[in-house]
Length: 475
Ligand SMILES: [Zn+2]
Image (tube, rainbow, N blue to C red; front, top):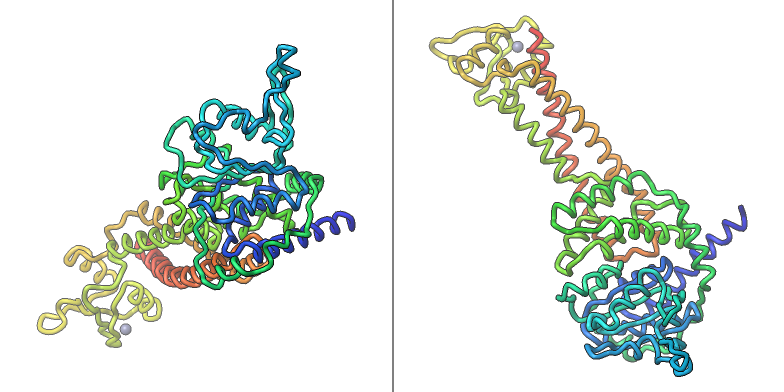
């Protein structure tokens, strides 16, 4: 138990320390650092999209340093040959009639590889790439060898247009759009700061990574995270953003590794923000995906906009059924109370069952005094604003809908309002989440709480109308 705990704490400390070390050395590269480190720890591949000269390969090389691994870098062109990437043919093997390569120092020998202009890969090397990436195997002459590759980092200025490269693109679970350093202070630190030449003194062994992955495999997932992922999948599909089942599996794997690496006991909902680095296909979808995962993290998988729309629909339906605000005020004959809605009317009647009412349109010359029951039937038959037209089954349906919405509303309140402090703490303790994401999320969560409060009032009003409907239906 204590050994287990020690391991967990030690791992958490390492990750935080490596992160902050990298943040010092690579300014404004928070997202890239998150993706690269998580790619390394979960054995996935990451793609950097953006102009050259943005410290991408240096970042990959530094990662390789912390695992003391073999690093392979290559800038691909359309004319790159297999020799350049996989190693020269062995002459000795050739003499024995075999096409075998000397792979030392080339991709099949690397733990971390960085391939610049990855989508320039031509058909002579593409298939071998895919095998290395998918299966961590390399066909060397007659032999199939296991390659030690942990993560491959690809860089490109643009996405591939050629369909033959789509399979390659799909292998990159992490996708980062990299832009040049924006802030002058960051630029100065990058140019004149001393941190980045220092190299990292932090180390993670390959055995540590394997151990972490084993631990992550058994990591439980919070139920709200399940709900969030299911909802995200549906919402993304509605936006024509398709994430294959294979990718979802890998995404969940990464969330588990991220949780294990930061010493969590389970995958909690702060982790789902990481989806924004994995669940898009085209750069223009990024903002949508980020928006979606932030709002789902706040609400625990409920779409607040949809819930509010449904509450408003029910309210509008009931109002149209004559249960909203009256088009005209009704006066009580006995106590002169002015009554503006069915809800008020019902309350009034409960308090004073014997009171009678003026006809709302005949209050002066030809006034009529009506019992509650007569009033209802005149309102419905003569003026068309009565609830008497509603059929019992419609009331039942509304009741069921109301109960369903009330449940969802309570769940959302629990997540957004009561769960806010917990989420805040989870976010602050989460080494993988950027400050910008936290700020955005908390801002948004406040706005959501206000929307929800408003929707709560609408729901309450709908509930009152239903109560009234079922009461008048029982007359
Ligand atoms: Zn009265």
